[in-house]
Every structure is written in structure tokens, then in C-alpha cells.
Length: 118
Image (cartoon, rainbow, N blue to C red; front, side):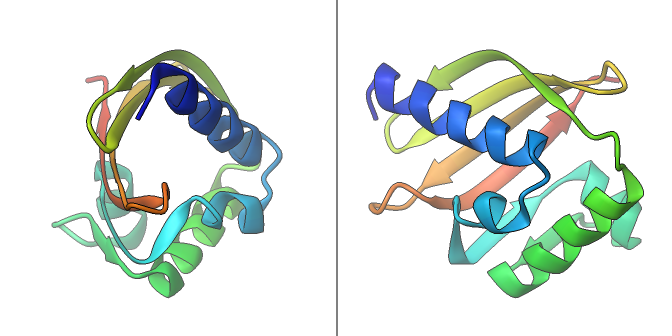
């Protein structure tokens, strides 16, 4: 992944979330995606914070968007790797978030691990 591709991906991803456009958000993810997040653990009551598959991801994101109607992300930095990207952003509550996203050959997210400031 080039730096330009990483920035473009990040910009599209942030724009989809800030628009609360669920279909655009989900367009960034593979059908068999795996997400691990402390927010998922809290919102879904799952200690492991795991969400597997796009159907489950849709349900989780729908729940999150409903729970946080003021949700907004401000991109701080984009780090690119080999078939991966880390998005570092601040949400509407001022929480810093780093999301490691492993990308499929198609350029969509196959695995994501979210990390939040303490």
C-alpha cells in the first residue's frame, strides 16, 4: 500500500463514518471480516470484543450509530504498512483511537483491531 492509497482509504473511511452512511462504511470491509474492539466488548456485552462477518458487523455498527448520534471522527494520522494501515483519529468525545486494519488483496478490511486512549 502506498502512502497515497493509505491516505485515500483513510479519507473515504472517515467521510463514510462522519456521514453516518452505513452502506458506505460497510463497503470498506470484507464479507468475512474480523473486528476486535473494546467498544464492541462494551456495546455488545462480549468480553472478547470480537465481531465476525459482515452481517454481525452491520448489526454492531447500526447499534453504535444509534447509541452515538453525534459520532464524528477527526483524522490525526495515517500509517501505512504492507497490506495494512493504521488510522489514528479523535472522536467526538476527545478519545484518541488507533485502528490497525489488515487489508485483503481487494483493498478492503479483512481484520481490524481498535485501540483507545485510557
